[in-house]
Length: 414
Image (tube, rainbow, N blue to C red):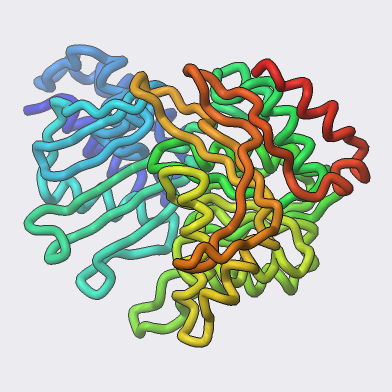
């Protein structure tokens, strides 16, 4: 007889009788577990029950099993773990400082499914044969992604990207070495001036964290509308409306894609629009919003700032056959002002690699239209330094109270 299993069964029965939700009331569950463990200890002294070898460990294991993620909870509680993923019952990985490692944790197939169902419960989303992919947000803000067979070969593939907002402002990014003080001052001024900013980079390059820090520089008087696949942004402003997409129902109705959210945001009197990540045709609607004078920001997957510009010119074409390259390219040139590229280096540290400006000019290269770009900050000799270029709209900086040449000259030495 396993003493921990006996106590866990007793606690489960009490939770059922009292109508407690373990996922939303973890403190209540912990108090109940401590109460039952104490009573069990007393009974084990006078009865035939096996004693608990380690009372504190037993309490933690039972709390993890009932109101946490069981064997995965220790990784959720570890501040150094950034991501957890399961490829198979015996293949559980974690990432620390940008590097992956295989853990000793072994789960059963049924255990994985039970954990996924528990994680999805609060989100109202589902995963089944008709919907074999799911994106959802956990109660603590972490992002869950699940893929099931027959899309995967044999096993459920589960990925948990922990919500670890390690920085809340551009100054904190400077302290962590992600940005130089000069680049941070320039970006803060660019946000206040109302420039349209794209944050580019690969997976786990720190795009969302950088976007959050840029959003923190938005003047408090502005009304911000954010649109995301799942909630990840934490914008510290008083007037914010956050929206996320919705899956279709079992009948195939009620889906709300990201493009719809961007369109709805335009009807909500925004001072600024922020899109968590553009991947598809919603890029067109965001560009049209920028072009209509509503400043904003978004992230995009790209290997460099210039590749991000090229991708911004391609994604709107997915919106329909009537959208042409001849229309999109000049629109991007007129609508996007800055592109910031961030990257994870070989040591796992996230750094801004370059900041480019888009003056708004388009050239015909003979092979098609090309958007002119200028380097404002670039990576040289292992650091981010001031380049020769200037951002567009110097009059916007002046209106916001910034003297642009002086602002950029402060970063001339990196």
